Image (cartoon, rainbow, N blue to C red; front, side, top):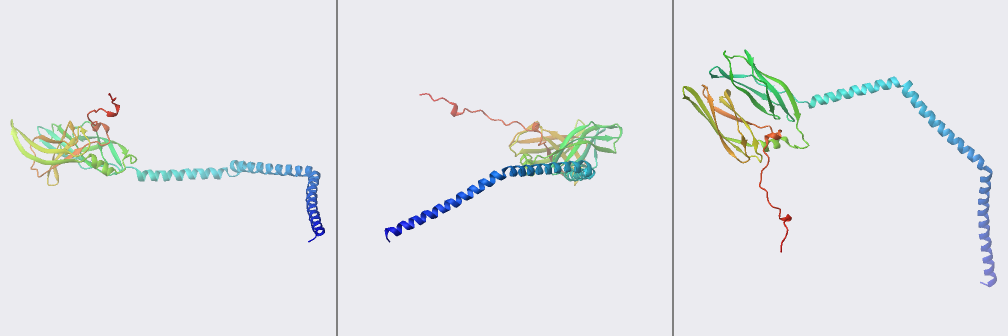
Length: 318
């Protein structure tokens, strides 16, 4: 290719580039000219569009207020009332389903122990797995009533309630056991995950060698004796644990008594001897029932131990 041809090609390329730049400049110039000529009109159109949007929003708000407080007010009030009623009914149904079932009690038994004295016995049952109860009770009989006593019952348990050596100048035939009021406490499952295991760990008291000795006369008064041992197989020591002793002939209770220990240490074994005053029928079985309010912090003895020296606090001397 000669020098002349090369120069012609370069000139042609330069012309092409200049033509493209001229076209681009014309486009920009045309757009700028159009914007200058129509700028005021565009501003007016935009302003009217904004005014229209604001007006529409105001109308929507006004319609909402009008509909809420004038047109649909009555319907909404009825709907709210119905919702409240339905929710209350659901809440009541849920509360009733979760509420504790009442305590049940057996018929009262009367045991004459001589010298115009009588023992009263009844049995109370708590059928609830998630509730324990505090309750007050009394016995009423011909010509009088016993003092009001406060007691408790653990979840899903039955327990005896007694009043011992009640004096009456007449022979008692009809005695009534009355629960006066009950206060329910739900088991806190956030701290007690498995109540059955929790209770077993605290009521593992082993009763052994329960024996009933027939009555013998001391100063012309018949006295019987019951003996048993209790071993505390728990990690807890207790203040004043109570033990009910039921004497049975077959399945029938023929005598009842109660004793309270001052303390029962963890791992300790205690021998318990209890005297019975009065004549009792023949006995074929002895049942010993321990009672400790596991939910009362006053039932537990504080943990004891000897203090030691922390070696980390000692200063090294050379």
